[in-house]
Image 1: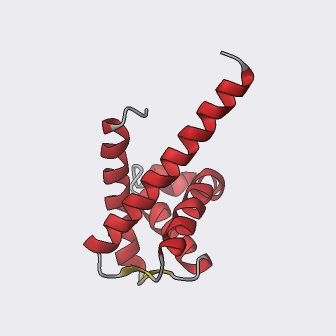
Image 2: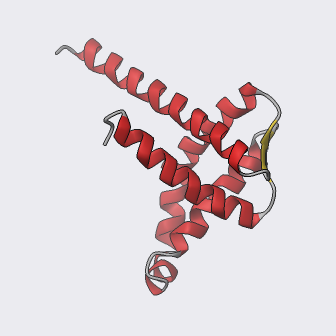
Length: 124
């Protein structure tokens, strides 16, 4: 396989993951009344930013809170996931998560639904 085909596969995988995350956020907004969006565009931007935040900010927070994460046997990671969702809510106009506990349960729901859908479409 040449470099162009490899790059094209990477782009397709990125777009598929982005679309899947947008779908998961849409489902989440119907399950949790505290998660709302004003337009499809806001939902797409929120999904993109959530992926970026999870790739860049989340690992830094995990590293900085490693002692607390170890003491809580990893349960503090759930708090970090909720904070990432709240950060996206604060940054994306038109995407709103009302309160920490909504973000906490929604982040757990997003993780579970994302895991299931990724397994169904064959992504690792």
